[in-house]
Image (cartoon, rainbow, N blue to C red):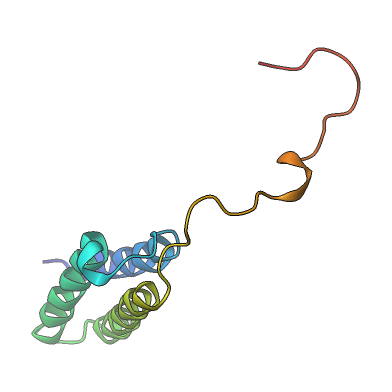
Length: 110
């Protein structure tokens, strides 16, 4: 496999996991198949990088470092979800009724 494809794939997955991990609903790890799948894929990517024949001008080492960070972030996200259960529905609503009021008295867009 082309080393550029490997590093691009790893960095894309790492970015997606970090960004995606911030919008995933909090749930136990068993209820987080996407996070667990991401973790499994990152571990497989790490194993592939570790077994690469050479360093590809330092890019393999950078990809390994990014993969380690992504694995750590996914684990932290799972731990966070396990320690912060979903809030109960029916809590207080925000003040003001949901946003700024438009200026003017003309017809409102539909």
